[in-house]
Length: 279
Image (cartoon, rainbow, N blue to C red; front, side, top):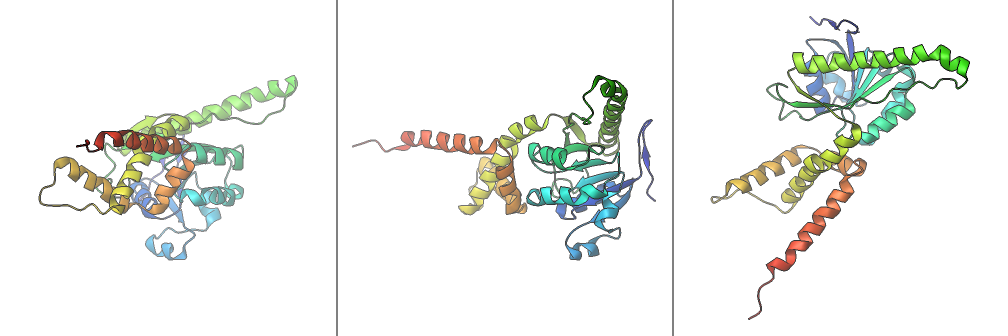
């Protein structure tokens, strides 16, 4: 039976999951023992995969809402849920880029809703035996309320802003503790910009190379070196993910284009070394 999770300042009973693809199903499996789940997907066939399907407005009214939709559908989804979110709800995304969803949620969600960009650095393949030891990135953002600008209003509203920010810190602490202690994840905190700068190489590059290696048709042979076996593994991991993921990574990570340009430059810089000497 599901039980609400509580810290000294936060109680979370209901968790909404919007988007029930491969990762949405993994998330639901991981959270099912601890929360009352409400699941929604725009594909009617997905309703057959989970017993706790609800309407979009019911899912959006949960204590916490995870957005597990493809990044190309992210802005549309945020617009759709905005009218149904309750004051004080925490909205978390699990996109593989962070600056874009942070900016979208900041601009489109109500001011009394909290946002926490996250990136679980794993998927159904790597987490098939559980989440223990796997990295889970949290990117807390500066919370702000749009208040009046007169000295009188600012004086009256200062405590409101402080309470708003304090509540956000409590919500972040709740999920930090839950992921680290209950799920045994390796919780890492960084800004969305730092995340995207880092993953331009650690994620965008590896996905790009894996897809390219598959496209040129590399296959195992009887004389494979261990380094080549690693390349085969990279290809398999990339091909297990969708092409939409690769496109989303390189379209919405603002640092991916510079990485690709640098990669092309380094490959071209090596070409002169491979010319046959004249005889």
